[in-house]
Image 1 (cartoon, rainbow, N blue to C red):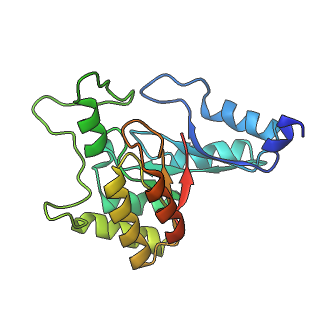
Image 2: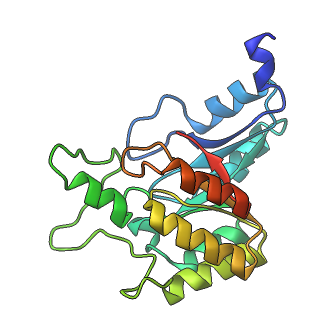
Length: 214
């Protein structure tokens, strides 16, 4: 089969474009036009710092042949695990909610190890802890996490696990399924900071959790 035909009707669920705070190869409109020319069905725009909801609406109005889907990543610029930001994003059309990436505790702990390198979207403020906590000291989802899961469920959004640790992914997805979230994706299982065991990946699949590699 011609490789180009594989893109026909495809959806890229993880597209980083400019404008951004870090360099990107394509801007939103260029990415949408390339997707249109390839016959793709949709793109999900992702940004580590800002919701892409309003950008997605604008780009789709310019390139209506391709569905452009907004998302939100719950890093510190969005207030971390912030139900208000998720609700606003949902009202603006966002369909994908990512747990923390650059500011996930797991990601920052990995970077602090000997030889660790900062995530390309790293952002720090002097004297302030960048870690976004999804669970409390007893290992239970925080009230904010519970509220976010409820919004994701009620709005029919997709929950993506970001850069959480394998154990966190296990506990979060179990709770998400328990409260009725219908669409869950375990992301980056092969990322060095995650390195998810195959046995856990299999267990997540049995739970109904999809998987997206790097």
